[in-house]
Length: 348
Image 1 (spheres, one colour):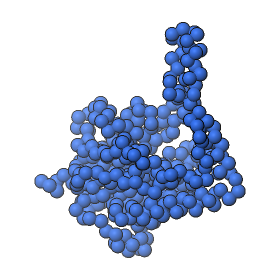
Image 2 (tube, one colour):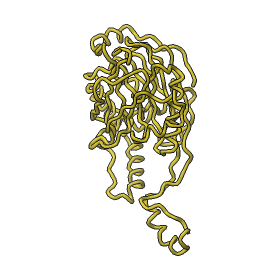
Image 3 (cartoon, one colour):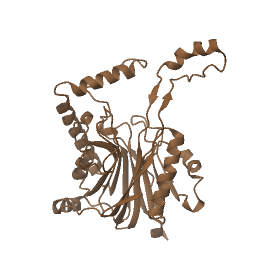
Image 4 (cartoon, helix red, strand yellow):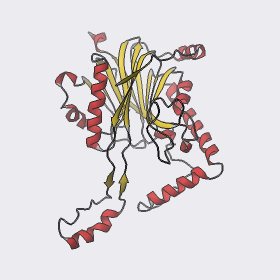
């Protein structure tokens, strides 16, 4: 797991502003949210939704291309995204987060108006210590590539981000790998010719509906050793693959890397893309001493009627203060999840 230099100190103006919204000193408040690159909860108004499932991909792609490249579309997206992020920041500011863990974050992407989303939220929420962990560099609509550096200092890209109120002793970044390109079948997977040639031909049209090639995306872990008033903690965030076996392997790598940073006090939050009741089984291959002491989750997806707990938390040395809470934001197809934690030793 690579390590970078100590975080830069905040500007005096940022420090003065942060004191106006000081959090509760008895616990650490962590909010995790998949931003979906600041997509409005009701969808982008400049994209016409497809009417049928079979034509959704083709028509949806066509509408996106036309909306993104027609005259004036970028200015429209910039204004929409800025307003979405401003409204989101107003909601989050009232919650007074200590750490904000974000997934699906754009920097300089045409689809979201060329904005630096992590920086906008960090400045709006007065969280002076922040960084991006890049999944890729370049524009999402064309071929993207491995970034020159994990922070996207001089290029556009996409990834995850950590924003903190408390100073960062060190930043750490790790690539977790990607799933291979694979064929994704429609609602009725094709069984081939295993039951006969004629039956295989008969079933092929139904299986072909909604079928396509899905390419894997590099998944990463972004972590920091934070000097909080409640002690130093190694805290990381990640966004795992939707392919379950790959996500399981990535979660084990992410947690193991974080555990080695500070085994007695570590926290991992983010969009795991795994059901909460699968986590124990997923982490079972790890040595017993590396198993997390805390696992917390609450349904947060989809945003309108959440019933799946994807945005989860693992930890050592910490316990929950009350139950996790999910909150719908003006953006995203996920709800934000709020975790309040305190060190276990504080209750002893």
